[in-house]
Image (cartoon, rainbow, N blue to C red):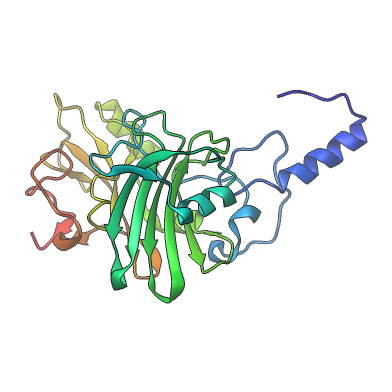
Length: 270
Protein backbone atom coordinates (compact mmCIF):
# COMPACT_ATOMS: atom_id res chain seq x y z
CA UNK A 1 0.00 0.00 0.00
CA UNK A 2 1.36 3.42 -0.89
CA UNK A 3 1.62 5.66 2.16
CA UNK A 4 0.90 9.39 1.69
CA UNK A 5 2.65 11.98 3.84
CA UNK A 6 -0.42 13.83 5.09
CA UNK A 7 -0.86 15.67 8.33
CA UNK A 8 -1.95 13.24 11.09
CA UNK A 9 -5.41 14.78 11.54
CA UNK A 10 -6.18 14.77 7.82
CA UNK A 11 -4.90 11.20 7.42
CA UNK A 12 -7.12 9.92 10.24
CA UNK A 13 -10.23 11.55 8.76
CA UNK A 14 -9.53 10.01 5.36
CA UNK A 15 -9.01 6.55 6.83
CA UNK A 16 -12.23 6.72 8.83
CA UNK A 17 -14.18 7.86 5.79
CA UNK A 18 -12.74 5.06 3.65
CA UNK A 19 -13.57 2.32 6.17
CA UNK A 20 -17.30 2.86 5.56
CA UNK A 21 -16.98 2.12 1.82
CA UNK A 22 -16.20 -1.59 1.94
CA UNK A 23 -18.87 -4.11 0.91
CA UNK A 24 -19.73 -7.11 3.05
CA UNK A 25 -16.90 -9.60 3.39
CA UNK A 26 -14.35 -7.41 1.60
CA UNK A 27 -11.03 -7.27 3.44
CA UNK A 28 -10.00 -3.74 4.32
CA UNK A 29 -7.09 -2.19 6.19
CA UNK A 30 -5.85 -0.63 8.35
CA UNK A 31 -8.74 0.91 10.31
CA UNK A 32 -11.53 -1.29 11.68
CA UNK A 33 -15.10 0.03 11.28
CA UNK A 34 -16.49 1.93 14.21
CA UNK A 35 -18.91 0.05 16.45
CA UNK A 36 -22.56 0.42 15.50
CA UNK A 37 -25.84 -0.71 17.07
CA UNK A 38 -26.64 -4.40 16.52
CA UNK A 39 -29.00 -5.12 13.65
CA UNK A 40 -30.39 -8.21 12.02
CA UNK A 41 -28.23 -9.21 9.04
CA UNK A 42 -31.31 -9.54 6.85
CA UNK A 43 -32.07 -5.84 7.31
CA UNK A 44 -28.63 -4.45 6.52
CA UNK A 45 -27.52 -3.62 2.95
CA UNK A 46 -24.37 -5.44 1.86
CA UNK A 47 -22.40 -2.21 1.49
CA UNK A 48 -22.97 -1.27 5.15
CA UNK A 49 -21.76 -4.49 6.79
CA UNK A 50 -18.27 -4.78 8.25
CA UNK A 51 -15.78 -7.50 7.39
CA UNK A 52 -16.58 -10.73 9.27
CA UNK A 53 -16.24 -14.48 9.11
CA UNK A 54 -17.59 -16.21 6.03
CA UNK A 55 -19.12 -19.60 5.38
CA UNK A 56 -16.76 -22.49 4.55
CA UNK A 57 -15.11 -21.70 1.24
CA UNK A 58 -14.65 -23.56 -2.01
CA UNK A 59 -11.83 -26.12 -1.76
CA UNK A 60 -8.44 -24.47 -2.24
CA UNK A 61 -7.09 -27.25 -4.44
CA UNK A 62 -9.89 -27.30 -7.02
CA UNK A 63 -11.37 -23.85 -6.46
CA UNK A 64 -14.43 -23.18 -8.59
CA UNK A 65 -14.00 -26.27 -10.76
CA UNK A 66 -17.25 -28.02 -11.68
CA UNK A 67 -17.69 -30.36 -14.66
CA UNK A 68 -19.97 -29.25 -17.47
CA UNK A 69 -21.58 -25.95 -18.28
CA UNK A 70 -20.67 -23.84 -21.30
CA UNK A 71 -18.70 -20.72 -22.06
CA UNK A 72 -20.99 -17.76 -22.58
CA UNK A 73 -21.45 -14.06 -21.78
CA UNK A 74 -21.70 -13.23 -18.08
CA UNK A 75 -25.45 -13.03 -17.23
CA UNK A 76 -26.55 -9.47 -16.55
CA UNK A 77 -27.93 -10.23 -13.03
CA UNK A 78 -24.51 -11.67 -12.12
CA UNK A 79 -22.80 -8.57 -13.49
CA UNK A 80 -25.03 -6.33 -11.37
CA UNK A 81 -24.37 -8.32 -8.18
CA UNK A 82 -20.62 -8.31 -8.78
CA UNK A 83 -20.72 -4.57 -9.36
CA UNK A 84 -22.44 -4.08 -5.97
CA UNK A 85 -19.66 -6.12 -4.38
CA UNK A 86 -16.97 -4.00 -6.07
CA UNK A 87 -15.79 -6.85 -8.28
CA UNK A 88 -14.42 -5.46 -11.54
CA UNK A 89 -15.79 -7.44 -14.50
CA UNK A 90 -15.19 -4.80 -17.15
CA UNK A 91 -13.90 -6.44 -20.28
CA UNK A 92 -15.16 -9.88 -19.23
CA UNK A 93 -15.84 -11.95 -22.33
CA UNK A 94 -16.74 -15.62 -22.13
CA UNK A 95 -17.14 -17.20 -18.69
CA UNK A 96 -18.22 -20.65 -17.52
CA UNK A 97 -22.00 -20.63 -17.14
CA UNK A 98 -24.48 -23.25 -15.97
CA UNK A 99 -28.11 -22.49 -16.78
CA UNK A 100 -30.28 -24.26 -14.21
CA UNK A 101 -34.08 -24.64 -14.38
CA UNK A 102 -35.71 -23.05 -11.33
CA UNK A 103 -39.18 -22.75 -9.82
CA UNK A 104 -42.03 -21.16 -11.77
CA UNK A 105 -40.21 -21.54 -15.08
CA UNK A 106 -37.36 -19.24 -14.04
CA UNK A 107 -33.67 -19.83 -14.78
CA UNK A 108 -30.89 -19.84 -12.22
CA UNK A 109 -27.19 -19.76 -13.05
CA UNK A 110 -23.82 -20.75 -11.67
CA UNK A 111 -20.89 -18.79 -13.05
CA UNK A 112 -17.13 -18.49 -12.65
CA UNK A 113 -14.60 -16.60 -14.70
CA UNK A 114 -12.37 -19.68 -14.83
CA UNK A 115 -12.31 -23.18 -13.41
CA UNK A 116 -9.70 -24.04 -10.85
CA UNK A 117 -8.04 -22.40 -7.84
CA UNK A 118 -7.14 -19.16 -9.67
CA UNK A 119 -10.73 -18.03 -10.18
CA UNK A 120 -11.60 -14.38 -9.47
CA UNK A 121 -15.30 -14.84 -8.80
CA UNK A 122 -17.82 -17.65 -8.37
CA UNK A 123 -21.57 -17.27 -7.94
CA UNK A 124 -24.76 -19.36 -7.80
CA UNK A 125 -28.18 -17.70 -8.01
CA UNK A 126 -31.46 -19.04 -6.55
CA UNK A 127 -34.78 -17.74 -7.83
CA UNK A 128 -37.49 -17.36 -5.20
CA UNK A 129 -41.08 -16.36 -4.77
CA UNK A 130 -42.19 -12.77 -4.49
CA UNK A 131 -39.30 -11.43 -6.54
CA UNK A 132 -36.70 -12.71 -4.06
CA UNK A 133 -33.35 -14.02 -5.29
CA UNK A 134 -30.59 -15.64 -3.27
CA UNK A 135 -26.91 -15.58 -4.14
CA UNK A 136 -23.91 -17.54 -2.92
CA UNK A 137 -20.72 -15.68 -3.81
CA UNK A 138 -17.00 -16.09 -3.37
CA UNK A 139 -14.58 -13.43 -4.65
CA UNK A 140 -10.84 -13.81 -4.93
CA UNK A 141 -9.18 -10.55 -5.91
CA UNK A 142 -11.37 -8.84 -8.50
CA UNK A 143 -10.14 -6.59 -6.76
CA UNK A 144 -12.49 -7.27 -3.81
CA UNK A 145 -12.00 -10.45 -1.79
CA UNK A 146 -14.80 -12.00 0.24
CA UNK A 147 -14.10 -13.81 3.48
CA UNK A 148 -14.92 -17.40 2.60
CA UNK A 149 -18.25 -17.89 0.85
CA UNK A 150 -21.02 -15.39 1.52
CA UNK A 151 -24.81 -15.52 1.19
CA UNK A 152 -26.96 -12.62 0.00
CA UNK A 153 -30.66 -11.97 -0.52
CA UNK A 154 -31.97 -9.52 -3.12
CA UNK A 155 -35.50 -8.09 -3.10
CA UNK A 156 -36.18 -6.61 -6.53
CA UNK A 157 -33.90 -3.62 -7.10
CA UNK A 158 -33.08 -3.14 -3.39
CA UNK A 159 -29.42 -3.42 -2.25
CA UNK A 160 -28.12 -6.88 -1.43
CA UNK A 161 -28.68 -8.08 2.12
CA UNK A 162 -25.83 -10.09 3.64
CA UNK A 163 -27.23 -13.04 5.63
CA UNK A 164 -23.91 -14.83 6.16
CA UNK A 165 -23.59 -14.14 9.88
CA UNK A 166 -27.10 -15.34 10.68
CA UNK A 167 -26.47 -18.61 8.79
CA UNK A 168 -23.19 -19.16 10.63
CA UNK A 169 -25.00 -18.70 13.94
CA UNK A 170 -27.35 -21.55 13.01
CA UNK A 171 -24.88 -23.84 11.25
CA UNK A 172 -23.35 -25.76 14.19
CA UNK A 173 -20.17 -26.38 12.23
CA UNK A 174 -17.39 -28.38 13.91
CA UNK A 175 -15.47 -26.12 16.27
CA UNK A 176 -11.76 -25.38 16.08
CA UNK A 177 -10.91 -28.07 18.66
CA UNK A 178 -12.96 -30.73 16.85
CA UNK A 179 -11.39 -29.87 13.49
CA UNK A 180 -7.92 -29.92 15.02
CA UNK A 181 -8.62 -33.43 16.35
CA UNK A 182 -9.80 -34.61 12.93
CA UNK A 183 -6.82 -33.04 11.22
CA UNK A 184 -4.51 -34.69 13.72
CA UNK A 185 -5.81 -37.98 12.29
CA UNK A 186 -5.10 -36.93 8.71
CA UNK A 187 -8.33 -35.16 7.71
CA UNK A 188 -8.35 -32.03 5.57
CA UNK A 189 -10.07 -28.67 5.98
CA UNK A 190 -13.82 -28.14 5.97
CA UNK A 191 -14.98 -26.86 2.57
CA UNK A 192 -18.12 -26.22 0.50
CA UNK A 193 -18.86 -29.16 -1.79
CA UNK A 194 -20.74 -27.71 -4.78
CA UNK A 195 -20.88 -30.87 -6.88
CA UNK A 196 -24.70 -30.99 -6.77
CA UNK A 197 -25.48 -27.31 -7.30
CA UNK A 198 -26.29 -27.77 -10.98
CA UNK A 199 -29.06 -30.22 -9.97
CA UNK A 200 -30.38 -29.16 -6.56
CA UNK A 201 -30.34 -25.92 -4.50
CA UNK A 202 -28.14 -27.52 -1.83
CA UNK A 203 -24.45 -27.58 -0.98
CA UNK A 204 -22.71 -29.54 1.73
CA UNK A 205 -19.92 -28.63 4.11
CA UNK A 206 -17.50 -31.54 4.36
CA UNK A 207 -13.93 -32.50 5.12
CA UNK A 208 -12.21 -35.53 3.64
CA UNK A 209 -10.30 -38.08 5.67
CA UNK A 210 -6.94 -39.51 4.70
CA UNK A 211 -7.88 -42.46 2.44
CA UNK A 212 -5.13 -44.49 4.09
CA UNK A 213 -6.59 -44.00 7.59
CA UNK A 214 -10.40 -43.69 7.71
CA UNK A 215 -11.83 -42.07 10.81
CA UNK A 216 -13.57 -43.98 13.57
CA UNK A 217 -17.35 -43.75 13.49
CA UNK A 218 -18.69 -40.74 15.37
CA UNK A 219 -21.53 -38.20 15.21
CA UNK A 220 -20.12 -36.55 12.06
CA UNK A 221 -18.34 -39.25 10.08
CA UNK A 222 -19.94 -40.89 7.03
CA UNK A 223 -19.02 -43.04 4.04
CA UNK A 224 -17.23 -45.58 6.25
CA UNK A 225 -15.13 -42.90 7.92
CA UNK A 226 -13.90 -41.34 4.69
CA UNK A 227 -15.61 -37.99 5.22
CA UNK A 228 -16.74 -35.58 7.94
CA UNK A 229 -20.17 -33.93 7.78
CA UNK A 230 -20.41 -30.22 8.55
CA UNK A 231 -24.01 -29.68 7.49
CA UNK A 232 -26.11 -28.67 4.47
CA UNK A 233 -26.94 -25.21 3.19
CA UNK A 234 -30.25 -25.12 1.29
CA UNK A 235 -32.25 -22.52 -0.59
CA UNK A 236 -35.89 -22.96 0.42
CA UNK A 237 -38.37 -20.90 -1.64
CA UNK A 238 -37.29 -17.44 -0.50
CA UNK A 239 -34.53 -17.92 2.09
CA UNK A 240 -31.40 -19.89 2.93
CA UNK A 241 -31.45 -22.39 5.75
CA UNK A 242 -28.96 -24.76 7.32
CA UNK A 243 -29.80 -28.37 8.06
CA UNK A 244 -28.11 -31.38 9.57
CA UNK A 245 -30.00 -33.75 7.26
CA UNK A 246 -31.79 -33.52 3.90
CA UNK A 247 -34.14 -35.93 2.09
CA UNK A 248 -32.66 -38.13 -0.61
CA UNK A 249 -34.51 -36.16 -3.30
CA UNK A 250 -32.36 -33.14 -2.46
CA UNK A 251 -29.07 -35.03 -2.50
CA UNK A 252 -28.71 -37.42 -5.47
CA UNK A 253 -26.03 -40.09 -5.16
CA UNK A 254 -23.79 -41.82 -7.69
CA UNK A 255 -21.56 -43.90 -5.45
CA UNK A 256 -18.55 -41.61 -5.95
CA UNK A 257 -16.51 -40.07 -3.14
CA UNK A 258 -18.64 -37.57 -1.16
CA UNK A 259 -21.76 -38.86 -2.95
CA UNK A 260 -22.12 -42.38 -1.54
CA UNK A 261 -25.40 -44.20 -1.99
CA UNK A 262 -24.87 -46.08 1.28
CA UNK A 263 -23.36 -45.22 4.62
CA UNK A 264 -24.63 -41.64 4.76
CA UNK A 265 -26.85 -41.15 7.84
CA UNK A 266 -27.37 -37.47 7.00
CA UNK A 267 -29.46 -38.21 3.89
CA UNK A 268 -32.87 -39.56 4.81
CA UNK A 269 -35.15 -41.86 2.85
CA UNK A 270 -32.44 -43.71 0.96
